Image 1 (tube, rainbow, N blue to C red):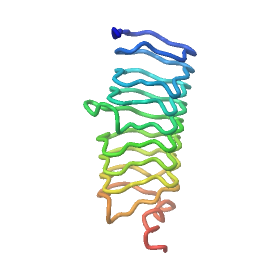
Image 2 (cartoon, rainbow, N blue to C red):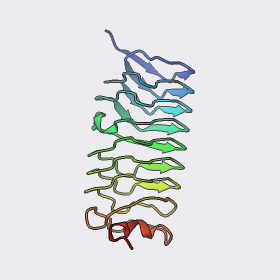
Image 3 (cartoon, rainbow, N blue to C red):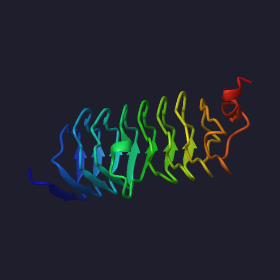
Length: 183
């Protein structure tokens, strides 16, 4: 099957995409849930109000992708093409998603649900978790240096098994660093 190259186009309420490369495109209220987006390329694209839950992201390129108010349950970002992997999330539902072993420094997570997300062995240096719910999110051997958790809640991070040097936490959230000790 021949791949397409599309630049600068806006897609509204679609539920299928031709395989290929999309650059500077905007996707509004698209339903791509359960779709196979393997090896697609999304460069400088914006997704607004889309449903991408359980989409297959095997070797998918996401470079400077922006997701706003999207439903993205159970996504395996760890299967994406790691070269240039970069994105931001605002108002998104990312519950049960996996970022296992991803290198996503300075990623912005804003007003998002990240319940039971897996950040094990990820490099989140300088990441910002702004008003995010991290209930039962997994952090193990994760690099969190200079990351900001000041306005987020429900996280449980073991300081002994994660690198948290110069990370920022609020006084109310610091209890999430003591869960291991049952204090």
